[in-house]
Length: 170
Image (cartoon, rainbow, N blue to C red; front, side):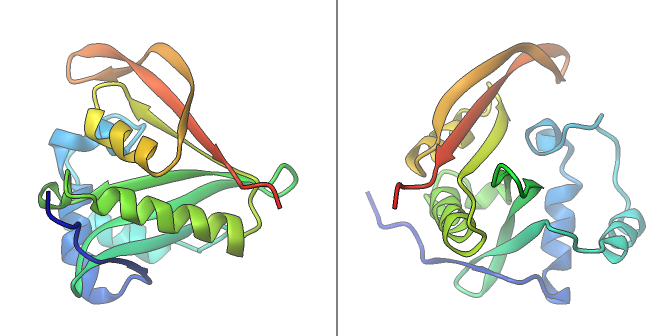
């Protein structure tokens, strides 16, 4: 098995927008990335959504492989009192199943624990997203629960898998 490519997390630039639009507009993987109902996404609507972002507490990084954007990872839904947040990841199809997602998640978790002083990071995934579930496990997330038939996905109900990771004890 070959080594996974070097993965870095960085801030988004305008040069990344075409790739990020390609990911956001992909209806085939919509339910793996988005809890809202699938719908076509125009470039104008995508650009307006990005222009309207105010930042807030959410943290989003571009996943970079050899100088090229291949996806994003984010921490959102921060609870400052309990010190937890939710993680999310989206990758181009060609970047999946290569160790890139696992490497990006490991870096995101390290950022959340070390730089944002989080105690816990959690995520949700549809049960059929087996590649994502494998990547989450490899990054240290553990199964915490399952919401049975909680999501309508491509013509049928699917379970939502709940996973989390706790900061190491210091």
